[in-house]
Amino acid sequence: MVGATRGFSRYASPPASPGVSPAGTGLGGAAGATPTLLEVIRSLAGSSVETIERSKTIFFPGDPAERVYLLRRGAVRLSRVYESGEEITVALLRENSLFGVLSLLTGQRSDRFYHAIAFTRVEMITAPATSVRRAIEQDASVGLLLLQGLSSRILQTETMIETLTHRDMSSRLVSFLLVLCRDFGVPSNEGITIDLRLSHQAIAEAIGSTRVTITRLLGDLRNEGLVQIDRKKITVFDPVALAKRFS
Amino acid sequence: MVGATRGFSRYASPPASPGVSPAGTGLGGAAGATPTLLEVIRSLAGSSVETIERSKTIFFPGDPAERVYLLRRGAVRLSRVYESGEEITVALLRENSLFGVLSLLTGQRSDRFYHAIAFTRVEMITAPATSVRRAIEQDASVGLLLLQGLSSRILQTETMIETLTHRDMSSRLVSFLLVLCRDFGVPSNEGITIDLRLSHQAIAEAIGSTRVTITRLLGDLRNEGLVQIDRKKITVFDPVALAKRFS
DNA sequence: CCAGGATCAGCAGCCAGCCCGACACACCAC
DNA sequence: GTGGTGTGTCGGGCTGGCTGCTGATCCTGG
Image (cartoon, rainbow over all chains, first blue to last red; front, side, top):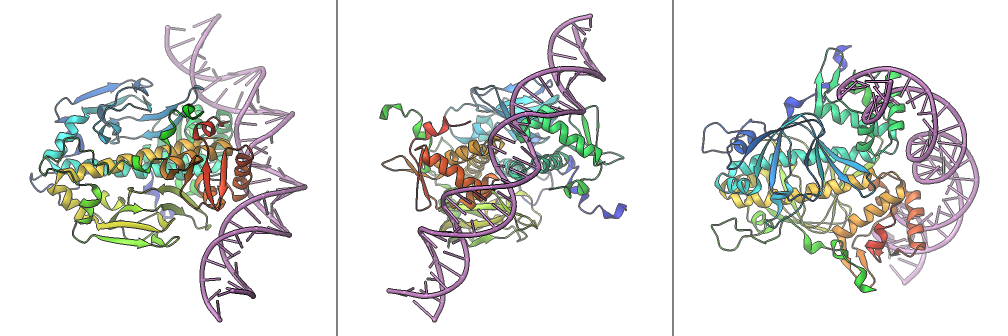
Protein backbone atom coordinates (compact mmCIF):
# COMPACT_ATOMS: atom_id res chain seq x y z
CA MET A 1 0.00 0.00 0.00
CA VAL A 2 2.68 2.37 0.96
CA GLY A 3 4.65 1.44 -2.07
CA ALA A 4 2.07 2.98 -4.35
CA THR A 5 3.14 6.50 -3.59
CA ARG A 6 5.59 7.07 -6.37
CA GLY A 7 6.05 10.73 -7.01
CA PHE A 8 4.59 11.54 -3.66
CA SER A 9 7.51 13.66 -2.70
CA ARG A 10 6.85 16.11 -5.51
CA TYR A 11 4.40 17.61 -3.08
CA ALA A 12 5.34 18.72 0.41
CA SER A 13 8.67 20.24 -0.24
CA PRO A 14 9.68 23.59 1.15
CA PRO A 15 13.13 22.01 1.41
CA ALA A 16 13.12 21.70 -2.37
CA SER A 17 13.04 25.46 -2.71
CA PRO A 18 15.12 26.41 -5.71
CA GLY A 19 16.53 29.84 -6.14
CA VAL A 20 18.57 29.53 -3.02
CA SER A 21 19.86 26.03 -3.41
CA PRO A 22 23.44 26.27 -2.29
CA ALA A 23 24.21 23.32 -4.53
CA GLY A 24 26.98 25.14 -6.26
CA THR A 25 27.23 23.81 -9.77
CA GLY A 26 30.72 24.92 -10.35
CA LEU A 27 29.87 28.55 -10.80
CA GLY A 28 31.02 31.49 -8.72
CA GLY A 29 34.54 30.24 -9.08
CA ALA A 30 36.17 32.98 -7.06
CA ALA A 31 35.36 32.35 -3.41
CA GLY A 32 35.34 28.76 -2.23
CA ALA A 33 31.85 28.36 -0.73
CA THR A 34 29.11 29.88 -2.87
CA PRO A 35 26.94 32.06 -0.67
CA THR A 36 23.19 31.85 -0.77
CA LEU A 37 21.00 34.59 -2.15
CA LEU A 38 19.90 35.29 1.37
CA GLU A 39 23.43 35.95 2.54
CA VAL A 40 24.18 38.08 -0.47
CA ILE A 41 21.19 40.33 -0.02
CA ARG A 42 21.72 40.65 3.67
CA SER A 43 25.22 41.94 3.03
CA LEU A 44 24.12 44.73 0.70
CA ALA A 45 24.24 48.41 1.52
CA GLY A 46 20.89 49.55 2.85
CA SER A 47 19.52 46.07 3.39
CA SER A 48 17.35 45.25 6.35
CA VAL A 49 15.47 42.40 7.93
CA GLU A 50 11.80 43.05 8.51
CA THR A 51 9.03 41.26 10.27
CA ILE A 52 5.46 41.91 9.28
CA GLU A 53 2.37 40.74 11.08
CA ARG A 54 -0.33 38.70 9.38
CA SER A 55 -2.59 40.73 7.08
CA LYS A 56 -0.46 43.86 7.21
CA THR A 57 0.42 45.46 3.91
CA ILE A 58 3.97 45.38 2.59
CA PHE A 59 3.35 47.71 -0.29
CA PHE A 60 0.33 49.24 -1.96
CA PRO A 61 -0.31 49.69 -5.65
CA GLY A 62 1.02 53.10 -6.58
CA ASP A 63 3.88 53.06 -4.11
CA PRO A 64 7.24 53.78 -5.70
CA ALA A 65 9.10 50.59 -6.51
CA GLU A 66 12.62 50.88 -5.24
CA ARG A 67 13.30 47.82 -3.10
CA VAL A 68 13.63 44.13 -3.73
CA TYR A 69 12.36 41.58 -1.24
CA LEU A 70 13.33 38.06 -0.40
CA LEU A 71 10.77 36.17 1.62
CA ARG A 72 12.50 34.35 4.43
CA ARG A 73 9.64 32.90 6.43
CA GLY A 74 5.91 32.89 5.91
CA ALA A 75 3.75 33.61 2.88
CA VAL A 76 2.96 36.76 0.93
CA ARG A 77 -0.04 37.37 -1.26
CA LEU A 78 0.30 39.52 -4.36
CA SER A 79 -3.00 40.77 -5.63
CA ARG A 80 -4.55 43.18 -8.03
CA VAL A 81 -7.13 45.59 -6.72
CA TYR A 82 -10.01 46.92 -8.79
CA GLU A 83 -12.15 49.98 -8.43
CA SER A 84 -15.05 47.70 -7.63
CA GLY A 85 -13.20 46.73 -4.48
CA GLU A 86 -12.71 43.26 -5.82
CA GLU A 87 -9.28 41.82 -5.21
CA ILE A 88 -7.83 38.90 -7.09
CA THR A 89 -4.77 36.98 -6.08
CA VAL A 90 -2.00 36.84 -8.62
CA ALA A 91 0.50 34.85 -6.62
CA LEU A 92 0.95 33.25 -3.25
CA LEU A 93 4.66 33.45 -2.57
CA ARG A 94 6.41 30.85 -0.52
CA GLU A 95 9.60 31.00 1.46
CA ASN A 96 12.68 31.95 -0.50
CA SER A 97 10.67 33.69 -3.19
CA LEU A 98 11.85 36.95 -4.63
CA PHE A 99 9.40 39.75 -5.13
CA GLY A 100 9.32 43.40 -5.92
CA VAL A 101 11.62 42.65 -8.84
CA LEU A 102 9.76 45.12 -10.96
CA SER A 103 12.09 47.70 -9.49
CA LEU A 104 15.00 46.03 -11.23
CA LEU A 105 13.38 46.28 -14.61
CA THR A 106 14.29 49.71 -15.81
CA GLY A 107 16.29 52.58 -14.58
CA GLN A 108 13.29 54.87 -14.59
CA ARG A 109 11.01 55.47 -11.71
CA SER A 110 8.15 53.02 -11.68
CA ASP A 111 5.28 52.27 -9.35
CA ARG A 112 3.98 49.08 -7.84
CA PHE A 113 0.80 47.87 -9.34
CA TYR A 114 0.21 44.97 -7.05
CA HIS A 115 -0.89 44.93 -3.49
CA ALA A 116 1.54 42.88 -1.38
CA ILE A 117 0.12 41.71 1.88
CA ALA A 118 1.49 39.41 4.56
CA PHE A 119 -0.59 36.27 4.37
CA THR A 120 1.00 34.92 7.53
CA ARG A 121 3.46 36.46 9.90
CA VAL A 122 6.34 37.20 7.60
CA GLU A 123 10.08 37.59 7.92
CA MET A 124 11.88 39.02 4.95
CA ILE A 125 15.06 40.65 3.79
CA THR A 126 14.93 43.75 1.69
CA ALA A 127 17.47 45.84 -0.15
CA PRO A 128 17.36 48.85 -2.45
CA ALA A 129 17.21 47.96 -6.11
CA THR A 130 20.23 50.12 -6.78
CA SER A 131 22.33 48.10 -4.34
CA VAL A 132 21.23 44.91 -5.97
CA ARG A 133 22.19 46.22 -9.38
CA ARG A 134 25.56 47.24 -8.14
CA ALA A 135 26.12 43.89 -6.49
CA ILE A 136 25.38 42.11 -9.76
CA GLU A 137 27.91 44.21 -11.57
CA GLN A 138 30.56 43.45 -8.99
CA ASP A 139 29.91 39.76 -8.58
CA ALA A 140 28.38 37.85 -11.45
CA SER A 141 27.31 34.94 -9.29
CA VAL A 142 24.77 37.23 -7.65
CA GLY A 143 23.12 37.68 -11.02
CA LEU A 144 23.01 33.97 -11.45
CA LEU A 145 21.35 33.46 -8.09
CA LEU A 146 18.74 36.06 -8.90
CA LEU A 147 18.13 34.46 -12.27
CA GLN A 148 17.50 31.14 -10.64
CA GLY A 149 15.12 32.77 -8.22
CA LEU A 150 13.18 34.40 -11.00
CA SER A 151 13.12 31.26 -13.09
CA SER A 152 11.60 29.30 -10.31
CA ARG A 153 9.09 32.08 -9.80
CA ILE A 154 8.10 31.82 -13.46
CA LEU A 155 7.55 28.11 -13.17
CA GLN A 156 5.46 28.65 -10.08
CA THR A 157 3.34 31.24 -11.83
CA GLU A 158 2.85 29.12 -14.88
CA THR A 159 1.63 26.19 -12.82
CA MET A 160 -0.94 28.59 -11.50
CA ILE A 161 -2.05 29.35 -15.04
CA GLU A 162 -2.47 25.67 -15.61
CA THR A 163 -4.69 25.55 -12.57
CA LEU A 164 -6.81 28.43 -13.73
CA THR A 165 -7.49 27.19 -17.21
CA HIS A 166 -9.34 24.19 -15.86
CA ARG A 167 -12.96 24.64 -16.70
CA ASP A 168 -14.89 23.30 -13.79
CA MET A 169 -14.32 24.60 -10.33
CA SER A 170 -13.83 21.16 -8.91
CA SER A 171 -10.71 20.55 -11.00
CA ARG A 172 -9.50 24.04 -10.31
CA LEU A 173 -9.74 23.58 -6.59
CA VAL A 174 -8.01 20.22 -6.68
CA SER A 175 -5.26 21.62 -8.82
CA PHE A 176 -4.86 24.57 -6.50
CA LEU A 177 -4.62 22.34 -3.47
CA LEU A 178 -1.85 20.39 -5.16
CA VAL A 179 0.02 23.61 -5.84
CA LEU A 180 -0.34 24.55 -2.19
CA CYS A 181 0.94 21.14 -1.15
CA ARG A 182 3.97 21.68 -3.31
CA ASP A 183 4.66 25.17 -1.99
CA PHE A 184 3.45 25.05 1.57
CA GLY A 185 3.03 21.40 2.42
CA VAL A 186 4.66 19.84 5.45
CA PRO A 187 4.51 16.07 5.91
CA SER A 188 2.41 14.93 8.82
CA ASN A 189 1.62 11.46 10.07
CA GLU A 190 -1.59 11.33 8.05
CA GLY A 191 -0.49 12.96 4.81
CA ILE A 192 0.50 16.44 3.88
CA THR A 193 -0.69 19.46 5.77
CA ILE A 194 -0.85 22.82 4.07
CA ASP A 195 0.83 25.16 6.47
CA LEU A 196 -1.48 28.12 5.99
CA ARG A 197 -4.67 29.20 7.65
CA LEU A 198 -6.85 29.51 4.59
CA SER A 199 -10.32 30.93 4.65
CA HIS A 200 -12.73 29.81 1.95
CA GLN A 201 -12.88 33.40 0.85
CA ALA A 202 -9.13 33.53 0.30
CA ILE A 203 -9.23 30.39 -1.81
CA ALA A 204 -12.09 31.80 -3.84
CA GLU A 205 -10.13 34.97 -4.54
CA ALA A 206 -7.18 32.94 -5.68
CA ILE A 207 -8.95 30.70 -8.14
CA GLY A 208 -11.69 33.02 -9.31
CA SER A 209 -14.69 31.53 -7.63
CA THR A 210 -17.00 32.36 -4.77
CA ARG A 211 -16.94 31.53 -1.13
CA VAL A 212 -20.08 29.44 -1.33
CA THR A 213 -18.78 27.24 -4.09
CA ILE A 214 -15.52 26.60 -2.27
CA THR A 215 -17.43 25.61 0.85
CA ARG A 216 -19.46 23.11 -1.09
CA LEU A 217 -16.55 21.63 -3.02
CA LEU A 218 -14.28 21.34 0.01
CA GLY A 219 -17.15 19.62 1.77
CA ASP A 220 -17.37 17.15 -1.08
CA LEU A 221 -13.65 16.40 -0.89
CA ARG A 222 -13.90 15.87 2.83
CA ASN A 223 -16.85 13.55 2.47
CA GLU A 224 -14.91 11.52 -0.04
CA GLY A 225 -12.19 11.12 2.53
CA LEU A 226 -9.56 12.90 0.48
CA VAL A 227 -8.85 15.81 2.76
CA GLN A 228 -9.27 16.82 6.35
CA ILE A 229 -9.85 20.29 7.66
CA ASP A 230 -8.98 21.22 11.16
CA ARG A 231 -8.84 24.74 12.45
CA LYS A 232 -8.54 26.21 8.92
CA LYS A 233 -5.62 23.97 8.10
CA ILE A 234 -6.11 21.56 5.27
CA THR A 235 -4.51 18.14 5.25
CA VAL A 236 -4.35 16.17 2.04
CA PHE A 237 -4.16 12.48 2.80
CA ASP A 238 -2.80 11.38 -0.54
CA PRO A 239 -1.95 13.89 -3.25
CA VAL A 240 -1.74 11.16 -5.85
CA ALA A 241 -5.27 10.01 -5.14
CA LEU A 242 -6.42 13.61 -5.11
CA ALA A 243 -4.83 14.23 -8.48
CA LYS A 244 -6.87 11.38 -9.92
CA ARG A 245 -10.00 13.28 -9.09
CA PHE A 246 -9.74 15.65 -12.01
CA SER A 247 -13.04 15.54 -13.74
CA MET B 1 -13.05 62.29 -31.08
CA VAL B 2 -9.47 61.31 -31.46
CA GLY B 3 -8.59 63.12 -28.30
CA ALA B 4 -10.49 60.66 -26.17
CA THR B 5 -7.89 57.99 -26.48
CA ARG B 6 -5.85 58.63 -23.38
CA GLY B 7 -3.82 55.58 -22.45
CA PHE B 8 -4.45 54.16 -25.87
CA SER B 9 -0.81 53.59 -26.48
CA ARG B 10 -0.56 51.11 -23.65
CA TYR B 11 -1.84 48.66 -26.22
CA ALA B 12 -0.19 48.13 -29.57
CA SER B 13 3.41 48.23 -28.59
CA PRO B 14 5.93 45.68 -29.70
CA PRO B 15 8.34 48.62 -29.63
CA ALA B 16 7.80 48.76 -25.89
CA SER B 17 9.40 45.36 -25.53
CA PRO B 18 11.49 45.39 -22.38
CA GLY B 19 14.25 42.94 -21.81
CA VAL B 20 16.12 44.23 -24.76
CA SER B 21 15.73 47.92 -24.30
CA PRO B 22 19.16 49.30 -25.01
CA ALA B 23 18.38 52.19 -22.69
CA GLY B 24 21.55 51.71 -20.73
CA THR B 25 20.99 52.87 -17.20
CA GLY B 26 24.57 53.44 -16.42
CA LEU B 27 25.43 49.79 -16.07
CA GLY B 28 27.89 47.75 -18.09
CA GLY B 29 30.46 50.39 -17.46
CA ALA B 30 33.24 48.68 -19.37
CA ALA B 31 32.44 48.97 -23.06
CA GLY B 32 30.93 52.19 -24.31
CA ALA B 33 27.75 51.05 -26.03
CA THR B 34 25.75 48.51 -24.03
CA PRO B 35 24.95 45.61 -26.32
CA THR B 36 21.47 44.15 -26.49
CA LEU B 37 20.58 40.73 -25.21
CA LEU B 38 20.22 39.65 -28.78
CA GLU B 39 23.75 40.60 -29.63
CA VAL B 40 25.10 39.00 -26.51
CA ILE B 41 23.44 35.67 -27.12
CA ARG B 42 24.38 35.65 -30.75
CA SER B 43 28.01 36.03 -29.78
CA LEU B 44 28.04 33.03 -27.46
CA ALA B 45 29.83 29.78 -28.16
CA GLY B 46 27.45 27.29 -29.73
CA SER B 47 24.78 29.82 -30.48
CA SER B 48 22.74 29.63 -33.63
CA VAL B 49 19.97 31.39 -35.46
CA GLU B 50 17.03 29.21 -36.34
CA THR B 51 13.93 29.62 -38.40
CA ILE B 52 10.93 27.45 -37.69
CA GLU B 53 7.82 27.16 -39.80
CA ARG B 54 4.37 27.78 -38.40
CA SER B 55 3.02 24.93 -36.25
CA LYS B 56 6.30 23.07 -36.09
CA THR B 57 7.51 21.97 -32.70
CA ILE B 58 10.52 23.60 -31.06
CA PHE B 59 10.73 21.18 -28.18
CA PHE B 60 8.56 18.45 -26.75
CA PRO B 61 7.85 17.70 -23.13
CA GLY B 62 10.46 15.23 -22.00
CA ASP B 63 13.21 16.57 -24.19
CA PRO B 64 16.38 17.40 -22.30
CA ALA B 65 16.55 21.07 -21.39
CA GLU B 66 19.93 22.37 -22.32
CA ARG B 67 19.40 25.43 -24.48
CA VAL B 68 18.02 28.89 -23.93
CA TYR B 69 15.98 30.64 -26.61
CA LEU B 70 15.39 34.25 -27.48
CA LEU B 71 12.47 34.84 -29.76
CA ARG B 72 13.46 37.26 -32.47
CA ARG B 73 10.46 37.33 -34.73
CA GLY B 74 7.06 35.71 -34.54
CA ALA B 75 5.19 34.07 -31.69
CA VAL B 76 5.69 30.86 -29.74
CA ARG B 77 3.09 28.96 -27.80
CA LEU B 78 4.05 27.15 -24.62
CA SER B 79 1.54 24.55 -23.61
CA ARG B 80 0.99 21.65 -21.29
CA VAL B 81 -0.14 18.37 -22.76
CA TYR B 82 -2.32 15.89 -20.91
CA GLU B 83 -2.86 12.19 -21.42
CA SER B 84 -6.37 12.98 -22.55
CA GLY B 85 -4.82 14.72 -25.53
CA GLU B 86 -6.05 18.04 -24.24
CA GLU B 87 -3.57 20.85 -24.56
CA ILE B 88 -3.72 24.08 -22.63
CA THR B 89 -1.72 27.17 -23.41
CA VAL B 90 0.45 28.48 -20.63
CA ALA B 91 1.99 31.39 -22.48
CA LEU B 92 1.99 33.08 -25.84
CA LEU B 93 5.45 34.53 -26.20
CA ARG B 94 6.03 37.66 -28.17
CA GLU B 95 9.13 38.97 -29.85
CA ASN B 96 12.14 39.46 -27.61
CA SER B 97 10.86 36.98 -25.06
CA LEU B 98 13.23 34.56 -23.43
CA PHE B 99 12.21 30.97 -23.04
CA GLY B 100 13.64 27.62 -22.16
CA VAL B 101 15.06 29.25 -19.05
CA LEU B 102 14.32 26.14 -17.09
CA SER B 103 17.70 24.94 -18.26
CA LEU B 104 19.36 27.72 -16.30
CA LEU B 105 17.73 26.69 -13.08
CA THR B 106 19.96 24.00 -11.75
CA GLY B 107 23.10 22.31 -12.81
CA GLN B 108 21.45 18.92 -12.94
CA ARG B 109 19.94 17.39 -15.97
CA SER B 110 16.30 18.34 -16.28
CA ASP B 111 13.62 17.81 -18.86
CA ARG B 112 11.20 20.13 -20.57
CA PHE B 113 7.68 19.79 -19.39
CA TYR B 114 6.10 22.16 -21.81
CA HIS B 115 5.43 21.77 -25.46
CA ALA B 116 6.90 24.70 -27.38
CA ILE B 117 5.41 25.20 -30.78
CA ALA B 118 5.87 27.89 -33.40
CA PHE B 119 2.61 29.79 -33.49
CA THR B 120 3.72 31.75 -36.52
CA ARG B 121 6.81 31.47 -38.64
CA VAL B 122 9.50 32.03 -36.08
CA GLU B 123 13.03 33.34 -36.06
CA MET B 124 14.99 32.82 -32.90
CA ILE B 125 18.44 32.72 -31.43
CA THR B 126 19.50 29.87 -29.25
CA ALA B 127 22.52 29.09 -27.14
CA PRO B 128 23.55 26.32 -24.77
CA ALA B 129 22.69 27.03 -21.15
CA THR B 130 26.28 26.41 -20.18
CA SER B 131 27.49 29.16 -22.49
CA VAL B 132 24.97 31.53 -21.04
CA ARG B 133 26.10 30.75 -17.54
CA ARG B 134 29.70 31.32 -18.49
CA ALA B 135 28.86 34.61 -20.17
CA ILE B 136 27.15 35.84 -17.05
CA GLU B 137 30.17 35.06 -14.96
CA GLN B 138 32.40 36.93 -17.34
CA ASP B 139 30.26 39.97 -17.88
CA ALA B 140 27.79 41.00 -15.24
CA SER B 141 25.77 43.16 -17.55
CA VAL B 142 24.64 40.00 -19.33
CA GLY B 143 23.07 38.83 -16.11
CA LEU B 144 21.29 42.11 -15.79
CA LEU B 145 19.89 41.88 -19.29
CA LEU B 146 18.62 38.38 -18.63
CA LEU B 147 17.09 39.52 -15.38
CA GLN B 148 15.20 42.23 -17.14
CA GLY B 149 14.00 39.76 -19.72
CA LEU B 150 12.74 37.40 -17.05
CA SER B 151 11.12 40.16 -15.05
CA SER B 152 9.14 41.28 -18.02
CA ARG B 153 8.18 37.69 -18.65
CA ILE B 154 6.86 37.44 -15.10
CA LEU B 155 4.75 40.53 -15.54
CA GLN B 156 3.39 39.13 -18.76
CA THR B 157 2.52 35.86 -17.10
CA GLU B 158 0.84 37.51 -14.17
CA THR B 159 -1.36 39.62 -16.41
CA MET B 160 -2.49 36.36 -17.89
CA ILE B 161 -3.46 35.14 -14.44
CA GLU B 162 -5.51 38.26 -14.01
CA THR B 163 -7.26 37.43 -17.25
CA LEU B 164 -7.99 33.90 -16.19
CA THR B 165 -9.49 34.65 -12.82
CA HIS B 166 -12.33 36.52 -14.45
CA ARG B 167 -15.38 34.45 -13.93
CA ASP B 168 -17.47 34.88 -17.01
CA MET B 169 -16.10 33.98 -20.37
CA SER B 170 -17.03 37.29 -21.89
CA SER B 171 -14.71 39.20 -19.55
CA ARG B 172 -12.02 36.61 -20.00
CA LEU B 173 -12.12 36.95 -23.73
CA VAL B 174 -12.07 40.74 -23.60
CA SER B 175 -9.18 40.71 -21.18
CA PHE B 176 -7.30 38.25 -23.36
CA LEU B 177 -7.81 40.38 -26.43
CA LEU B 178 -6.37 43.34 -24.57
CA VAL B 179 -3.33 41.30 -23.63
CA LEU B 180 -2.89 40.34 -27.25
CA CYS B 181 -3.18 43.97 -28.29
CA ARG B 182 -0.42 44.82 -25.87
CA ASP B 183 1.85 42.02 -27.00
CA PHE B 184 1.04 41.61 -30.66
CA GLY B 185 -0.88 44.72 -31.65
CA VAL B 186 0.14 46.88 -34.57
CA PRO B 187 -1.63 50.17 -35.16
CA SER B 188 -3.73 50.29 -38.28
CA ASN B 189 -5.84 53.04 -39.73
CA GLU B 190 -8.96 51.73 -38.00
CA GLY B 191 -7.58 50.75 -34.64
CA ILE B 192 -5.21 48.04 -33.50
CA THR B 193 -4.77 44.84 -35.37
CA ILE B 194 -3.55 41.75 -33.61
CA ASP B 195 -0.80 40.44 -35.76
CA LEU B 196 -1.59 36.75 -35.38
CA ARG B 197 -3.79 34.38 -37.27
CA LEU B 198 -5.88 33.10 -34.43
CA SER B 199 -8.34 30.28 -34.78
CA HIS B 200 -11.22 30.15 -32.34
CA GLN B 201 -9.85 26.84 -31.16
CA ALA B 202 -6.51 28.43 -30.25
CA ILE B 203 -8.20 31.15 -28.26
CA ALA B 204 -10.29 28.58 -26.45
CA GLU B 205 -7.20 26.60 -25.47
CA ALA B 206 -5.59 29.73 -24.13
CA ILE B 207 -8.39 30.92 -21.91
CA GLY B 208 -9.91 27.61 -20.91
CA SER B 209 -13.06 27.64 -22.93
CA THR B 210 -14.43 25.87 -25.97
CA ARG B 211 -14.42 26.65 -29.62
CA VAL B 212 -18.16 27.10 -29.82
CA THR B 213 -18.29 29.61 -27.02
CA ILE B 214 -15.51 31.69 -28.51
CA THR B 215 -17.34 31.78 -31.80
CA ARG B 216 -20.46 33.06 -30.13
CA LEU B 217 -18.73 35.67 -27.98
CA LEU B 218 -16.56 36.99 -30.79
CA GLY B 219 -19.70 37.27 -32.86
CA ASP B 220 -21.27 39.35 -30.12
CA LEU B 221 -18.28 41.69 -29.99
CA ARG B 222 -18.36 42.09 -33.72
CA ASN B 223 -22.08 42.84 -33.71
CA GLU B 224 -21.50 45.49 -31.10
CA GLY B 225 -19.01 47.10 -33.42
CA LEU B 226 -16.06 46.68 -31.09
CA VAL B 227 -13.91 44.41 -33.19
CA GLN B 228 -13.52 43.36 -36.77
CA ILE B 229 -12.36 40.02 -38.01
CA ASP B 230 -10.84 39.60 -41.37
CA ARG B 231 -9.07 36.51 -42.53
CA LYS B 232 -8.46 35.33 -38.93
CA LYS B 233 -6.92 38.61 -37.98
CA ILE B 234 -8.69 40.54 -35.28
CA THR B 235 -8.80 44.31 -35.24
CA VAL B 236 -9.82 46.11 -32.09
CA PHE B 237 -11.24 49.50 -32.93
CA ASP B 238 -10.81 51.05 -29.53
CA PRO B 239 -9.19 49.17 -26.66
CA VAL B 240 -10.45 51.67 -24.14
CA ALA B 241 -14.04 51.12 -25.21
CA LEU B 242 -13.45 47.39 -25.22
CA ALA B 243 -12.06 47.52 -21.70
CA LYS B 244 -15.27 49.16 -20.54
CA ARG B 245 -17.14 46.08 -21.61
CA PHE B 246 -16.11 44.03 -18.61
CA SER B 247 -19.27 42.64 -17.21
C1' DC C 1 -4.92 24.42 -62.16
C1' DC C 2 -8.13 21.84 -59.99
C1' DA C 3 -9.70 18.24 -56.66
C1' DG C 4 -9.99 16.60 -52.39
C1' DG C 5 -9.03 16.77 -47.54
C1' DA C 6 -8.38 19.26 -43.44
C1' DT C 7 -9.27 22.95 -40.69
C1' DC C 8 -12.31 26.57 -39.29
C1' DA C 9 -16.72 29.12 -38.49
C1' DG C 10 -21.43 29.44 -37.39
C1' DC C 11 -26.09 27.72 -35.56
C1' DA C 12 -29.40 25.31 -32.45
C1' DG C 13 -31.08 22.70 -28.55
C1' DC C 14 -30.21 20.48 -24.18
C1' DC C 15 -28.70 20.29 -19.63
C1' DA C 16 -25.74 21.11 -15.54
C1' DG C 17 -22.47 23.64 -12.89
C1' DC C 18 -22.14 27.48 -10.38
C1' DC C 19 -23.23 32.42 -9.28
C1' DC C 20 -26.39 35.08 -6.48
C1' DG C 21 -28.88 36.35 -2.47
C1' DA C 22 -30.31 35.18 1.85
C1' DC C 23 -30.06 33.16 6.38
C1' DA C 24 -28.51 30.52 10.49
C1' DC C 25 -24.82 29.10 13.32
C1' DA C 26 -20.03 28.48 15.29
C1' DC C 27 -15.95 30.67 16.98
C1' DC C 28 -13.08 34.35 18.78
C1' DA C 29 -11.76 38.79 20.72
C1' DC C 30 -12.90 42.63 23.29
C1' DG D 1 -22.84 40.41 25.84
C1' DT D 2 -21.74 41.95 21.13
C1' DG D 3 -19.72 42.41 16.87
C1' DG D 4 -16.69 40.49 13.41
C1' DT D 5 -15.23 36.76 10.76
C1' DG D 6 -15.68 32.40 8.89
C1' DT D 7 -18.60 28.13 7.76
C1' DG D 8 -22.58 25.52 6.21
C1' DT D 9 -27.12 25.22 3.44
C1' DC D 10 -31.01 26.05 0.23
C1' DG D 11 -33.30 27.34 -4.22
C1' DG D 12 -33.74 30.02 -8.49
C1' DG D 13 -31.85 31.32 -12.63
C1' DC D 14 -28.60 31.85 -16.24
C1' DT D 15 -24.15 31.26 -18.33
C1' DG D 16 -21.75 28.38 -20.92
C1' DG D 17 -20.29 23.50 -22.02
C1' DC D 18 -21.69 19.46 -25.07
C1' DT D 19 -23.44 17.18 -29.38
C1' DG D 20 -24.38 17.23 -34.07
C1' DC D 21 -24.50 19.34 -38.53
C1' DT D 22 -23.62 22.62 -42.50
C1' DG D 23 -21.05 25.58 -45.16
C1' DA D 24 -16.74 28.34 -45.90
C1' DT D 25 -11.88 28.64 -46.36
C1' DC D 26 -7.23 27.12 -46.63
C1' DC D 27 -3.65 23.95 -48.03
C1' DT D 28 -1.53 20.32 -50.59
C1' DG D 29 -0.37 17.28 -54.10
C1' DG D 30 -1.33 15.34 -58.49
